[in-house]
Image (cartoon, rainbow, N blue to C red; front, side, top):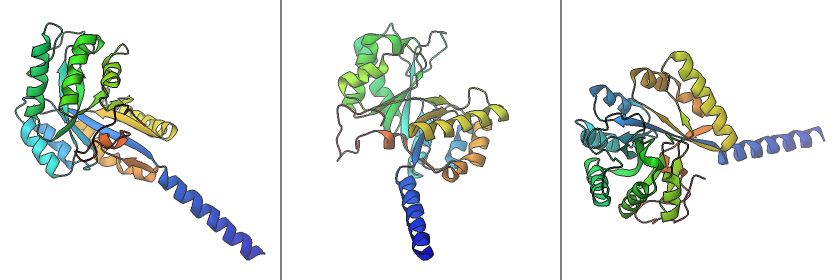
Length: 256
C-alpha cells in the first residue's frame, strides 16, 4: 500500500510538472531605438529570442538588421511618430502636418530601410498615436506590407490599437518598460516586476533600450527567466495567429 501511494504521488508530481511546462509564461522582450550608435551593436550579444526594433534610415540600422537576422533575432521597424514634447524625430518621422500620401510613402520607405522587419512599433508618438486619420493610414500601410504592430503605449489615449483591430492588423501592446531608470536597483526592480506580471498574466510584452547598463544587466540576468519557468520568445510568438507567408493572417489577432 505504501508503494502504491508513493507511485501515485510520483505520477501526480510528474503530471503537474508537465502541465507547468506546457503552460509556461512567456515574455517578448523588444530592444528598440537601434541604429544610430556603434554601441547598439552590443544587442547582438543577447539571446536570439530577444526581438530587435530598428529605427529607419539610420547609419547602422540596415547592417545591424541583417546581422541580427542571420543570428536568429526577429526584426521590427521602430517607426518615429510625433510626440507631445516636440522632440526631433529624425529621418522617417511621421507628424500631424503630413498628408495621407506623405504618411503612406514615409511608412513604406521606412519599411524598405529595415531588412527582414516582421512588425513595427512606435518610437515616441504620444501626439500622433492619439489621432484617428494618421493611425488609420499607418495601419492600412502596415497591413498592405503584412507587418504586425506593437503599440508602445506612450499615451493612454492612443488610437493605434483601435485602428489595428479595425483593420485586422495583428496587434500587441507594451505592458512594461524595463529601463526608464538605468540604475542597478531600478533595473532589478523592473525585472522582478516583469517576472511577477508574466506569471500572473501568462504572457507579457516588455520594451527596453540599448543602453550599456541595460545590456549588461540583461546579459547577467536573462537566464533567471528559465529558472522561473518563463519562456523568452520573439514578439510574433505572442500573436494568436501565424504571420508567416504560408500562414496568412487572422483579422482578429490580438495578444493572447
